[in-house]
Image (tube, rainbow, N blue to C red; front, side):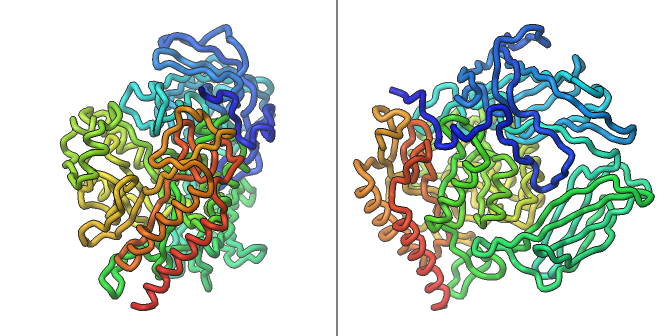
Length: 597
């Protein structure tokens, strides 16, 4: 029986009048903005419906309609369209100001109206988008209407683990608006984007401020170390400006130092835009150690990455974190258990999640949400890889990737994900494909990712169906013993393992139907099993070249009960100090092996 009333520990902290009130774009912050989260009117109509006149009830944005926190908790069928409506007030704006409407993410296909006029459409469930609504708005009250359709798993779009038939490792869909909606008032000469690249070899940072109207502009940049200004100079728009950083402080999980940036755009000595941002200086690369093993190096030093798989689901918000603190607590709980890396699994989080990883000090392996025309079959996804047979992924029918439009759409969204998230220093690995889900041309895709972003590593086909590309020789093991693959010129990583399960009956989504790879009856036996797994299978592989491992997983998700925490985040299933001790031994073994070389 499903626990349909299950809530996270953050449910009571949600301000339903103004949920998730924090500024949603920490990489480019302004003071003049307004959240449009909160109550909307909603209705569900046929997929061909147009701008409705009547609405059914109230929904709380930005929580998906299937979630408890939305106040609705209703499935959106692929044959239906979800409509939202609300009004908002706008102050008087000057002739040279623009009003920009932002959406953090809407799943999947959105059309947006302001005061009965269509201002734009967007396709894609995980990435932010915006519209200039200046021509459509007026001072005083304005009406916003959004129409959304979501095929979930009936189409070939990127969707991750969302499904209309949840069970096992497949979860409830999250349709409609699921990240913050907001507007800001900016000058016509405002910054559109800010691109940042750091280089610890040259002790410099490259800054590229993107502005559409460059006429007679000056851009002053101030870089601060805490309250001390170390750089104060003018830079140019729409080109890379290289700035030397004196005695750079490097970013790492142990010392997650971030430089603060303030940019002031002016024209004729009048300020037209001011933004706050930041950057972290770090370098990630692959090098061969003296024993011949290829290792991951952070800031010229070998580093072992001990991570945990993070699905980013909550029982009351589904894909949408109930509060900002919920994101912070997931990260800090894992860090307190000794982990230094999270693998964000087939989901793109709100920008604030990556900001928290930046400032807390948590490395991130970022998956691309996977798609394709269906789920991987058991032969392709389980049987063949576990007996060492890897299929060439140009057999598109096998991988349910026959649609040329679907493959093209995936590549476009992959590029957009890298462009959106490339700002955040915590991200060190891109993962285009996972376990054969919608996989195609992975070796070529890995080269494409490297061309777009040569500053990070690529795990081109995490787990199954290795095409010998990317930087990592990446394996998954849950039932069979973990063994090192044949030596090659890539870094050996175990990108998923464990999955040990325990049902906490008071905090389980469905005690009777729970799923896990190996079941344990209580926290004591679970803890001993995890300890034995690390001692007998992970630690011995470190001197043989193992450079990273990812335990499954951070929390239970619906029927999948292999989390270190329960789904509601109320119970940590094993003693955090035990897990911290395991991770300390693992990192010590790695450092000792490195010193012996």
